[in-house]
Length: 368
Image (cartoon, rainbow, N blue to C red):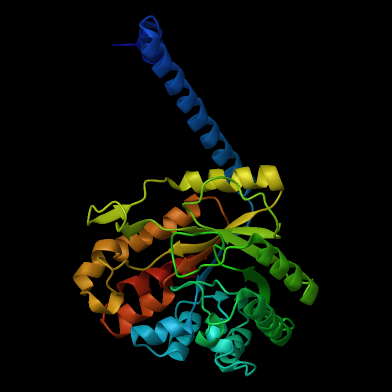
């Protein structure tokens, strides 16, 4: 019978084998040395990233988990479901208590100087009645394609004219809702510097700074969140400095850039986002939240969700993948997570008669 000590030589060999291999490789030519150096740098970098991720997850261990959803009435209508019934279902059936809402310029000011708050009013009224909390999106660039929601009449004007008009809309929206008991925070200009998606053409950082100062002046009592894309590299260090950072996380999309014509699963483990949040906290002292975690299907070949079958939709998101997505979000260590696609869950249930995603969401939110 083998004793514990009999395994020690095997353990030593397992631990020293990589070093022995590297040592032998180092004795080769110049290219061998270069490869050893690059491999060592990569290994050290990966270890550092993982260490920061584990530190961040540990540092947040006692913070309670808050889960919410993005909710956009325009998208619910596009999917063929009643927006008010959709929000009622999310509140009363799924028990969502955190909403990320939008204030599209196209909806608020359809004609110059005439504001229409009808839609946002009932959203706030429903949230207030349910004692739910709201993070309110402001600015030109807000969630959902085409990203920059500029009314047609403003798009024909030069920046010097439409920018003050946009600031007037932002001010009007804030003054109307800043005293709501449900308002928790603002999100300013969704993924502002992301060039590769949407119809946006103006990425002037000074405009973002000016809007940030306007928001802080109009309502100094609520925090402001500025979000980044999951594919953006680096740490956002430029101005403005928000109270909190947000990050969007997409896991499974259709490849329209590499031309593989297949679904693409991003390989980042959950701890990678803990690393991003950890670095952000170390450098800026500011926390990070998951402001948009993909929880809806992605249509292939430039099509739209209503144009594809349920079987095709399941290739990018079914109940099992949605369950994994909830687990993935928790694995990032970030304790505020907004899921993207709640209107889609309701569409699957009501239009396609498939409540599987809705039921997963109910189960997860009931845990929370």
